[in-house]
Length: 288
Image (cartoon, rainbow, N blue to C red):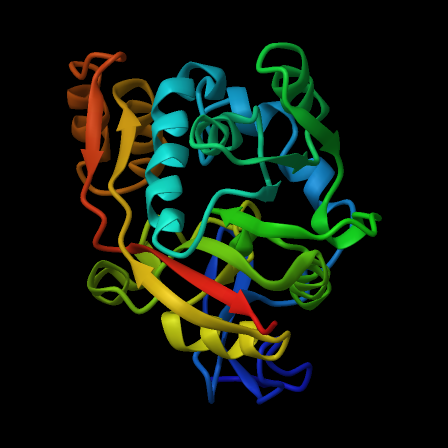
């Protein structure tokens, strides 16, 4: 494999190209195993990739993210139960909050705080419909002196256009003794290893980074955050979202047209349990 001189964003060791996906080179660190898109580090990435098309256009995104509200709110409530094992509810910065559903679920359990997302339409929904405190922006460029009891990164760590800047900013917004919750697609999981480049989460430019537990721990420790808990979430998606994803992923695959035709039979309103073999969460605490 061809090695690159830029170095791993987590440990600075040399990286080597794994494969090309959708014309993007995906590299893997020769030491810690972190995988990332090579060379895509532009600030405009968040605005161009996570616009309205991502939330309403299907494909690698959502056919209609706003229709997922109840499912995502329940997801936030489930994480509130995890957090309750580590202390009372407090203030939260929910990064990548989208329309605010996870933050709403946390608020149901007594949390308060701020949602942050680069998509103005999503932030408007969080503000106007859910009556939450939400602002437009990215964690890399978020300017505030406020610190929180929790910084929440639910399915967002793989999207950062400047990973170290984002994690550094996130850590700076965690109070001493506070928590950082990360949900991520696990690159070291059995499905990811068996499927290789055909694993569904290798989907640049929407996703730029792929973690396993060890390189995620290594990165967070560099910013003063140590893992105190971990697990697998109970995750659900709607039938509508499932059909959209399968139709997108089956393009150009042998038998894909048959699979796409079969997915049309799935009711759009169906609540589908996702077998969480390749998704995980880790909870980190900042030293007091």
